[in-house]
Image 1: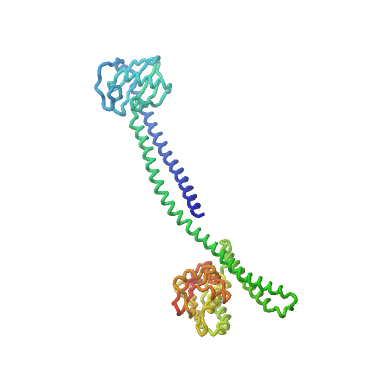
Image 2: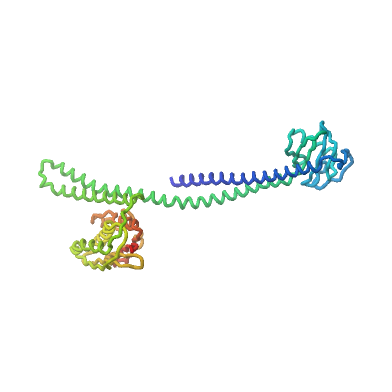
Length: 423
């Protein structure tokens, strides 16, 4: 699916770029062609004005004697001389050449050929090709006939042709380069989309699996109750307690999933307001203190007073509760949990450390992923779903903060929360 998406992106990108290059190159070519045509028109008009018969030009005398080939002329002696050459022919109404105004001595056959070709087009101005040479001409009507001016434009035509070839070469090279560049950025652009899609698939699979377990337990216990439908509720209370317990776990899971979905919505804003971080942390610690001591875990905490941040106090309390609950679950009897809150530079830093097996290095970057658990059997036994740390991360990121973990294998693990200080 993603390969097709990438190929569609590449195809669309190449079509758009090719179209833009075609427009750009066509515009350049049209501008150059118009400039050259304008210069040719000006030159032809100057040629016509300067070489109209006024007694200065010799009368036309057919030249039948062999001529020395001029530079640029063909072997037959009828080709024009040097490129950029210009000349004018004066004819009568019937098209018979009366006067030749030229610096070059050309054969009569050549003049007749080019005159006939120009008059045959029946246009005031145009271009023709004779003996592989391109000529521009202009026909002006005079009282006794016509004045036909000619200008060699072979070099200009060659320039335009070479310009097209250059455009084709440059366009081909550019399209190849752009293809590889577009492919590189397409892969980079689709990468996060593919990763998010894979995470979503994994999230749905994990959520379905987690919901399947309590539903199976509930369904099994319901079958047991139905098998003893004549018995009293008191005798079947054990199965009812199992159903109630699994229903509560499933309810907690759905609530956590709904909470994560709400946090993920971009348009769901948090009511940001300054709050006392020190007081919020202390309230959570006092709430959890008795529960932690009941687990035979030693709790120590050090809270710097008067620290404030901007955000939601209830959400921040939830983060502290998640971290303390997580530390309590993974601390064995007789272990310790330490909490510190202080100010470092422009940030508030909350550290929750617990003794225990720690977390392997390969798991540290993944423990904040949804449903990710380093020991699935243990967490299920303790009623967890692997969503607590994911919720904590989402909340802290919404508050423009940072959360991460550090661990010493078989000794301890520490969770760090950094929030900007509100001044």
